[in-house]
Amino acid sequence: MKILLVTNKAGGVDYHRLFVPHNDLAQKGFEVHKANSLEGATDKEIEGYDIAVFSRSLSGAGMVKDVADKLRRNGIKIVLDTDDYWHYSKKHLYYADHIATKTPEHCIESIIEADYNICTTPILAKKIEEHNKNVIVIENAIDTTIEQFKPKDIASNKLRFGWFGS
Image 1 (cartoon, rainbow, N blue to C red):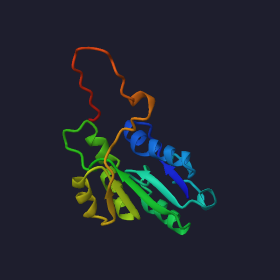
Image 2: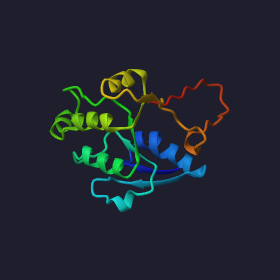
Image 3: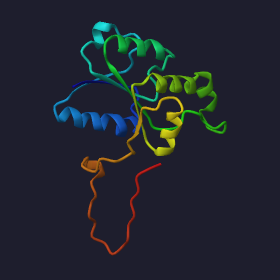
């Protein structure tokens, strides 16, 4: 299987939900390539891929339908990973930018266009199902085989707690 991972983000969400799992797939023999976006990609550049995997939106430039049409024209299945709800509270630091860039509309349009949607929780799945019934929950997880996340035994009579999350 030939997979195109489309994201230009380097934050924790994309790292844990997309980069780590797709790197694991590559180690298992899948052909995985990365692109920052597909807005300007030609049919020739994307031919031969089986699936394209996106985070939150198919296009950061508002070209969701164009990107979806290009992928479908080339027989490529669209997988969209949504890690969080697309409507921000008015108290959110990025609310104004979110509205100005029409991010909620692009997220919803992407959900509709996706052949397959994956998300983090059953509650979020219900929100996605309002737009596209083809959704599955894949919860957040930390790969504890990665060196920085391996538990370290420390000889001590103190009780210690560790926590991953937000």
